[in-house]
Length: 407
Image: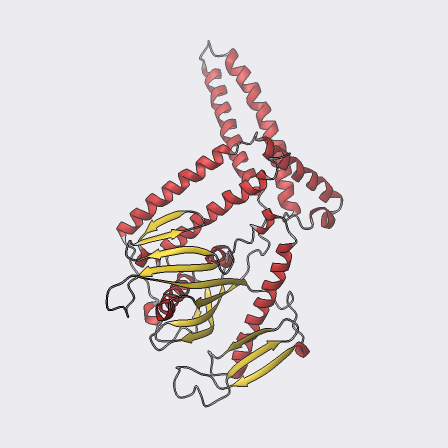
């Protein structure tokens, strides 16, 4: 499951008992966010004129797609199947509304009798109303386009930022959290690059993660993570602020990204850094230069030169794919840009304050407590990820509807 995790940090990547107090704190934060989520969705009525205009647009898109499937939906972010579901839901909602109106008249006529027929009519009316509410909720989810990237495996690139050795130690903490979370989920995790310091921190690390919904969960980790704590190297007890950055690169297939042999230059050299007697005795480190793009990747985590070449090529494909995505996003509307979900590499996304035992996500404005428990990379990390996904859904929905404000 976890390959190449036989180094000294592996004993740390083990299961932990969840802290009950933290879970209670997290539950309260989740309940508060869910309440906010419900309040926002209550503001978006199915009868909202903006929503109705958008549904009309999607319905017309479906009718066009029926005539010419590829041309009708190209670039829309919707499959024909989803558009068909939306079309059917619109019709079913209108039919159910008419059924409720008829039952309301029927119930009104039988109101004085209060007999079994009246009770049956009231019960059936409530059943139709519940069905109507569920269909309205479903259609709100369907109108958000599919992610541009889809469900792909990923490469996580971690790099220490401002803060010297403390930033590198924090990058190591984040590295271990992500690796343990992948293990906890039963995903495959492979180290492509691991640049360790003498104090146990890391300057840079690249991790390939393969698993269902890996991109969906990890895409919101992209950006700058800030830590506020007293470093182990601090003798005066002062609080330092350090940063590390995360980039999330979807892994393309070899069919999606074709690299011609003439476009690359290979360089073989001896590995550097800690690693035992073998490190500087063989030319196992592989450096690849892609001439058309200027991108350079390298790998030295394995003793085998051929294996390091495979890992470096995997990183190169991911970086080339990222450039393709960036070009694609520039040509899309703002509502489609939001579907990428990943933050800019310089955007501050989260703060970990050890002194206050607080974690704040600056995008969704969510604050929870229990830093150490969170960094174990289990349910606590996943719960926050789900909350951010809910926030993103709300923002996407608002972004879609707001374009109709001036029309």
